[in-house]
Amino acid sequence: MRSRPVHRHQQKQSGVRGMFGRLSFAVIVLVICTLSLLSATRSSNRAVSRSEIDVDTLWDTAASGGWRPSSAPRSHWPPPPAETNGYLRVRCNGGLNQQRSAICNAVLAARIMNATLVLPELDANSFWHDDSGFHGVYDVEHFIKSLRYDVNIVESIPEIRKNGKIKKIKAFQLRPDRDAPISWYTTVALEKMKQHGAIYLTPFSHRMAEEIDCPEYQRLRCRVNYHALRFKPHIMELSNSIVNRLRAQGHFMAIHLRFEMDMLAFAGCFDIFTAEEQIFLKKYRNENFAPKKLIYSERRAIGKCPLTPEEVGLVLRAMGFDNSTTIYIASGDLFGGERFMKPFRSLFPRLENHKTVDSTGELAKNTNGVLGSAVDYMVCLLSDIFMPTYDGPSNFANNLLGHRLYYGFRTNIQPDRKSLAPIFINREKGRVAGFEEDVRRVMQNTNFGGPHKRISPESFYTNSWPECFCRILATNPADKCPPDNVVDILDSQLTTGVVDDTESVSTNSTSIVDK
Image 1 (cartoon, rainbow, N blue to C red):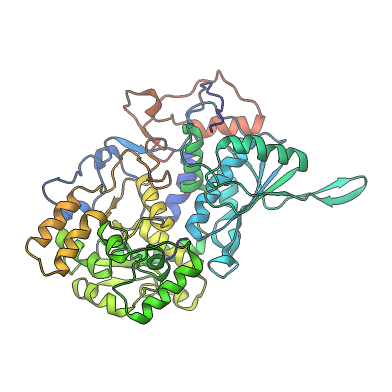
Image 2: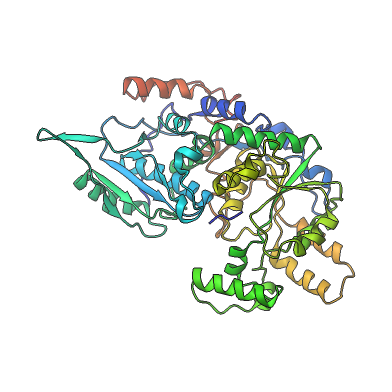
């Protein structure tokens, strides 16, 4: 699988502390039958011991510590006005998951600039070599409806009548800097929008700072990512069908086996391949990445190389998983092919992928890379355990880790490649005594999916705690869960166009798991 400062809003408190929950989540539950959010009682029952790894507990969700997902606003959040400052177009480049985070940033940019968002363009041709576009991947109606309290969205820039003639608004093209601050959008971009009526931001991958000192803006990103962006019905149905077939065998684990040409070339990990394969990898690297002297032994020693399939199997076996474990492999074409998969398969013979468990045959016939990527994403999201073998610059793995955290602290296994590297190097040199014990010791000190502080370089899209989480019994007011009657209040504001700052709301928070 390939996956290629601060503008302060009003802090005036009102009764509107949450949004979107019952409506958006209810729809998601109907489509994703097997997905359930974690209650505080259930989640508090599971904590992994630091002295041993109990595999049976890993099949359950991680301990929540009383936290639950909540992306609803908790302070003054008026609906978008009918009249905006202009239209915002964006071109989201890269792979499917890189585009996903760009869409979240586009919605936030539109909110910040008081702009009408034109349905984001997905630059699928440059990476996937298909033209699915937003309409071919996501449920457009659901996307627009879900964000009606946040931004106005249109599918295209409308024509205008000027001097008795029908004219099109030509968007002024801008190229934002990478990780551009909020202030750039409220000054440079907004000024051009007011001058021209519309702006076109291209390319729009990683073009907005992730760390923003405004929790409400971060929660908007979560509303987009985890509620508004829903794959089209046929993708959801196909994904659910695969999940149901896997669950018929019991628990299953999904592994993002990032042992593909592009990632190996990027990492500079060549020496384990044949001379012909090395020439191919080096050629790919020279054509696609900046020049850099990379020494395999040094890269390997500091954990910069993706785990090989065999190393993944050895980690799982050392943790206590046996050969009856069902494993779903999410990946593109593995570089080196069966030569590298054979040792893994000998350890875990029950390996599946989206083509082997797709009873419809649609994926086997379909050459659209986006479809396979979307299905893999959903199956990994719904799996009992998810294991990325190379997070690094992998948007697929990073987004999934964040999504699984948001939907109930679902268990993840994240190998510490840097700590595991010397153990594997010793094994290759014949020093195998204590190998499994050493691997277990490393893995015992990793996070299995519970709430934890975000520390750079960890991405907001990988870990949105604490901004997008809340506690019912919180001592800190900023962590308290929003009340139940949020949708009614927001609907009223949207209908009347009036924000009643004095309106009181219920403080009952017993049904806000889905907000």
